[in-house]
Amino acid sequence: MNLHEFQGKQILASYGVRVQRGLVANNAEEAVEKAKQLTEETGTSWFVIKAQIHAGGRGKGGGVKLAKNLDEVKEIAGKIIGMDLITPQTPPEGKKVNRVLVAEDVYYPGESETSEFYMSVLLDRAKGRNMIMYSTEGGMDIEEVAEKTPHLIFKEEIDPSVGLQGFQARRIAFNLGLSGNAFKEMVKFVDALYRAYIGSDSSMFEINPVLKTSDNMILAVDAKVTIDDNALYRQKEYAEFRDFSEERPIEVEANKAGLNYVDLDGTVGCMVNGAGLAMATMDLIKYAGFEPANFLDVGGTADAKRVETAFRIILKDPNVKAILINIFGGIVRCDRVAQGVVDAYSNMGDDINVPIIVRLQGTNAELAKDLIDKSGMPILSAVEFQEAADQVKAALS
Image (cartoon, rainbow, N blue to C red; front, side, top):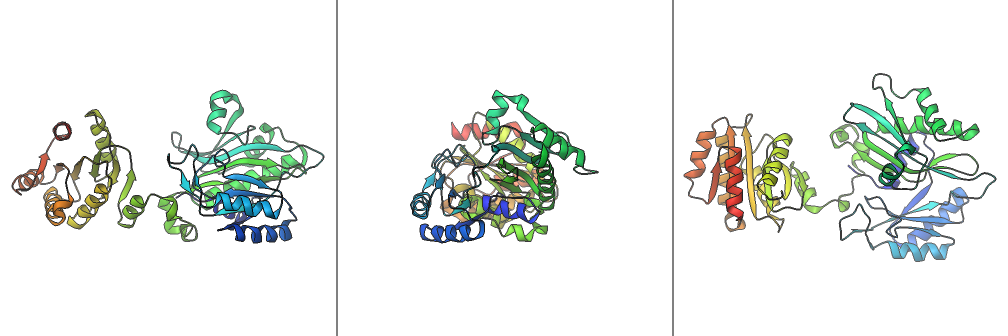
């Protein structure tokens, strides 16, 4: 589950991470009021207006602007709220901005210069360990840094049995070239950041930039946070942060129905039980010369109602030209799945206007094939993987 910047900063602050302070506004007039409140609380007279969407690269798309007075706050907020912001991480049509974060200006003058760093905490799946990835090149796309100057990216692996150690936090501060009070503040920052990552059950915390201010304070100017969906049952407070307006409506509907669904760009709809089989089915479709239109895992309870719901969701995609159902009957018998498919097809009638290919393997697979073949409905059945692929190709040729 992705969070907005202001939500991520709220989590960080609760664990003692110093952040760039800000207040959320839903319209231009409210932005002005929030700016006045921010001045009272922080003393800032300049403000950074930031679009709140689930995507990076907001500054390049015009979603982050500096306002030097209240009139500019109103003008800039009015332009950003309601715009379709296009960044390298949004769909081609962009994402509509519904709110902005009015943040304090932290780039104030001082005797020493400011510095920007990159820092993220995430899971290294290959090694089964969390790691802190960081760089002196803050404020830039980390992909660009990795491509052009890979020697400026550092990684700190964390042993799960002992957690982040003090010497590791100090090594990070040293590699970032810090000394004196800035060094001490960075050590505290890293420790608090990692505790926030673990305590919130996140799968990623990305801070870009981490700022060393002119008075040697370390703070998070941005916060890109993803919380593990599987942990939301014990993170009920954070579960309420979910912003459904940032997600595709079809994926929200599938989630509410208990289906694991990801919208893709192809033409062959997939209905599968089990993530591994779903990935193999998508490969099967590509080997047949086509592209999958979705990832849809119906789980182990593929009854008629669930199958019908999955059908309706897949068919909401106008690009779908065929549907491949690939079910392994282990927990659920194949004949029950087949009956569910037939019942769903019967209930939906003319709503289904694309070829349906059903491949059932496992318990009672032969009974299932016989049931589908004798249903009198235009449903194509298959037993083997290649047979299913050939029928998809034939249906779309």
